[in-house]
Image (cartoon, rainbow, N blue to C red):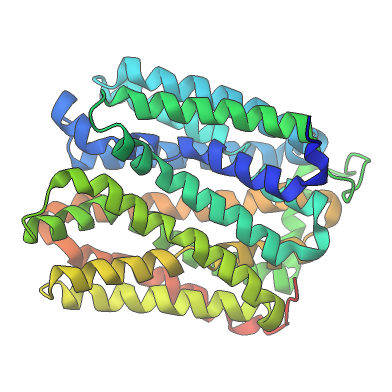
Length: 392
């Protein structure tokens, strides 16, 4: 059997891809759920918000209790992926009860808190000197994992909507097996951290960590609001083209999945220009699209679909670079908790963003994208003080 430790980064990014397929698994079958159980855009927004709320709660727990640094990252990741697979599959039984469905999506988010931040810690534990590029691959897989439910739905259009959810759960089980077999890398402190768990908050006293975190917060406000809107934006343009709605899943997958090469290219660019510079450029591009897209809403649909592709490419490209900057300036023995805390605050900001754009879409259409613009603006202002080149 191939030894996974010989290819740790490959193993981690594949596991991240499979594990994070749970994140938007319900959104991938959103159109079918609207037809089968009568959900509307606001209901789907609530289910998305429930995942975010669960993720925030989970990251807060592992950050404030110190679990992220007291339990081996590989074991916590594997346990979270297995639990996530179970609750994601259980959603099938409760889809017609919105409250129960939202509770299970909350639990799914809780499990994802043991997958995404711990995946970042695993990368650093195996490849600490290539953080920018390696995390670019990791976040690229998060992006592909987020898009994968749309792909799974596209591949199973002739099958019941339950199939993509079951396939997502199966992928999460495989992710758990991969990471449990791989284990945690040798480049982190072996001793449990000393002092109270909340000592990780001291990372925010570091100027570089604070700049990276604030930039990440602005990025977070935009990112998931945009991803939640992608199927609606694609549906609008296909409707104007009199195209088949069966293509919504494929095009939505394409727009979100373009973030994967965006992350990888950004990781490579960080080696030459530094993570801070790359993050600023990506944030400026996606922020410009927040401003311009609604102004062009009457433009030909092919142009708008192309702009969505550019947006999908750039909107996530800065994420790994913010994480790389933060990981370089956080205390090594509190790295897991510091990253989890940063994730918790960032994802807390996604909830009002998602709520705003999904509830206002029916009345205002593409104009709701202007609600996302303050995020990139804030992030760019916060990053002005981060001029240090971060060669990764």
